[in-house]
Length: 494
Image (cartoon, rainbow, N blue to C red):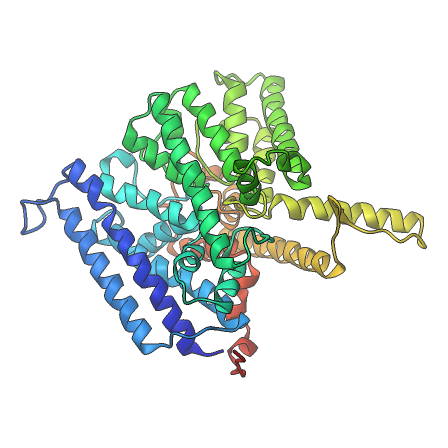
């Protein structure tokens, strides 16, 4: 692995990312935020902060570019760029939280930034959220929107110099275990996916405005819905709004948790692709039955929450897609409802969506593998293939899925043990681990929907930061950084 090439490419990505710091200046001006702590009292102090962060990240990106090499890269280097790139971007993204005084330590700032960029939605900001600068809150939403489709994918879409390396970046970072090219080149595919992403973001803004949500808040929630991030400028999250708004957001959460290649085909008049796709059918079935069981549990136990059907539907979709919005304190719901929501944290959205978790297609294929094994036990001589639609899934792909499932559960178990060792109770520790690894956000217990992660010990926050990072990169791409052989130099053939 050529560290200079990795450094140079990350520098280019950071240089591009630096321009995002200029966007929160708009709400800072609109709300004309306080500036009493700065010499330049004629303009909001947060503007100074974001301009400073822009220059710091821009200069650092340029320096990294100059110090490194701007060349194409190998598979190992592509994975390293993606894995290390998220860590570097999160570091610079944490600066506004720290400089604005929104958090009390670097660990909290990095936690908030990593939670945003990985679209996890776990927060350490103090409540009520309304007391924080709107520009800082907007920065959280922008981080989630950029992280939803992926900063690296965005880089591939606009950096014309990337060729083979662009393909490797795209395959290493693009959401989901599989993503078929829509166009002959990866660059064209990345651009199309970002256009689809932008299209639905704008569509949700319009839909929310039409149901009475102010324009700024519509943009904010469109950013955090389509990224399945779940940050909100209100302490009550989406519970601040009417039931009609909830249903609009439910629709767009389902869209965000769906394979984006299906959306591309639907926009081009091939809406039947949704029904033909086995993962999408499984996804909708899982949402329906999970929602039904959550609602049935509340009815059977006599739990009264008002609008329980819509609330159950909303929370089920929110957790299943890893968005993490809340409209009620689901931690006070019956035990079985909480159990179903905990399982939903593991399953997540579809492949090639912005959703987190293990992904629906992996769960579906694991069930098919179980069925195959049972048939082989009954008929040892029978040749049984695992199919996804009309496609026979190769044994190598099935082996990779099995290894992913094992690694995911193993990390969850280790993480839960770490949380318990650091003083959390079983429910809080297990659900926090599942939530951060699945990029969901709010969990259960002391990190439930009515609480933040601020009270956790420092070491617990650091561990959960690692879980968010591992979950967003779907484990394998991140673990490559810890394999010594990955750093052996190899001959690169152009």
